[in-house]
View 1: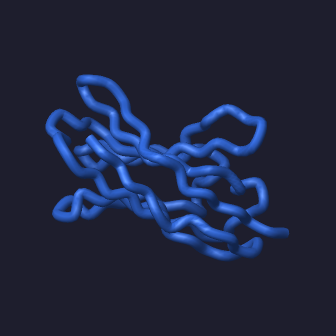
View 2: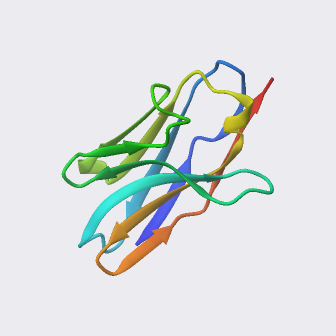
Length: 114
């Protein structure tokens, strides 16, 4: 599986961004897809996940502001981020979780200026 993320950038506090992550290759057996982020000097943390059954899970810090969704036909995962805060600044990674393990794509940098 190859994961290609895009959509990061610089935005002011209160602004919005939409991240995209397209999967290619063998995606058989994928159970869930998600977004994680890693801020400078911090560990990678979960942002949101979406199972193949359509169940979502969000970190408390982003609930009500971020929305995870997908386009099955395009094998693309999205993360709509609204009301962005400086503490959302991080490199955002998409991933897949499958019976064979987990894989992360390359990150996309999101910078929120105050």
